[in-house]
Image 1 (cartoon, one colour):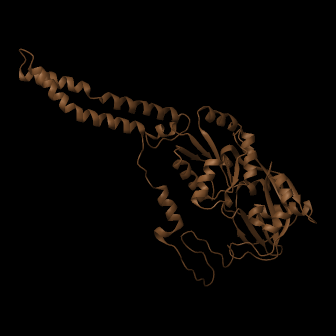
Image 2 (cartoon, rainbow, N blue to C red):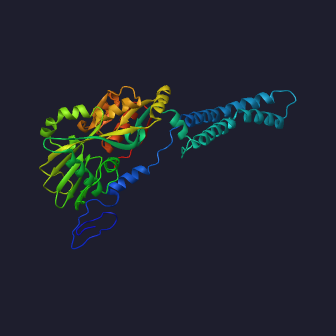
Image 3 (cartoon, rainbow, N blue to C red):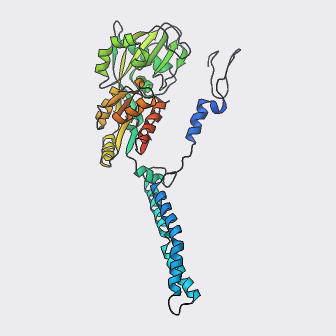
Amino acid sequence: KKKGDMILSGSFLVSGKVTVRAEHVGSDNYTAKISKEAKFAKKVNSEIMNSLNKIIKFISIAIIPIGILLFISQMQIEGNTIQMAVVNSVAAIIGMIPEGLVLLTSTVLAVSVIRLSKSKVLVQQLYCIETLARVDMLCLDKTGTITEGKMEVKEIVPVEKMTKEKMEQTLAQIAKGQEDSNSTILAIKDTFTIKEKSWKVKKQIPFSSQKKWSGITFEQEGSFILGAPEFVLGQEKLEKYQEVLEEKTKEYRVLVLAKSKEDFKEKELPNTLEVMGFVLLQDKIRKEARQTLKYFKEQGVQIKIISGDNPKTVSNIAKRAGVEEYEKYIDMSKIEGEEEVEKAAREYTIFGRVSPSQKKQLVIALKKQGHTVAMTGDRGK
């Protein structure tokens, strides 16, 4: 690390005098809050367990008067002694206790665990199998779930006086200088190679699912930003390139490449940005995706796609994968408040530009609507 750099990983690696102020520590720390939620153990809500408990409770109450009546009827039989009456009554009562029902249920669930393990499924609680069987709403992430998690650079579109060669070399330098190893950077590394001396990195800002962009500053070249146009460009510049964006986002994931002579202000974008062009990427659809989604449809399970990418791009991928009602998509970056989230969860199938916190809100909203919801594939940072 260069002089003045800090690493927040339990300690600081510093050179020189540094003053640090901690705003949240202990249980107030954001990481601690996430860890606490992950460790939360929810009570098992099993219809089978509830039904068994009701049966046992009913029999436990009913068995007392029934036992008394049986004993009285035995005593009325001529020649029966008290001892014989007790033995016969107990024998009849024991036959009423459904001990085999609990054993049979546990055996069936245990067999189900073994069958699921053959498909590399880890079952942590026995009655989770029942919950899985009752799922009627499945929320899927796009990257790594419907797609392979690998991106391909299909095309670069320079704007104004910018050349393809300049864009290619800039992207190659960014990919070489960035310490990120996300699918976008890997796709750029696979496509473009450096044909000149490597630029010296001054500062890096890694990609996050909230900002939707990553940045890097080179000592002699300035700052460069690669990210979602809606989050990088201002409204004026976004409208300027609206026609290009609308056309390309139908099939591709579109990223804007911009530069600035200014440095980043902490982790915020520079005030002045110059658009160099757009990078068009495309996800590789998993071979088994269409068949799997068809199976869920046959089982009566509804599909919702929740992603941090552009909703139009996600909609196109959903179409390629065979998701029904793929045309019902929404940009969640424009949604605020629980009521709007609940309305969106009810009306749409594809959710784009979703923040990590909104993913949780969507699942909660769907559960409020009476669905048994499963969520898989979230790799957001």
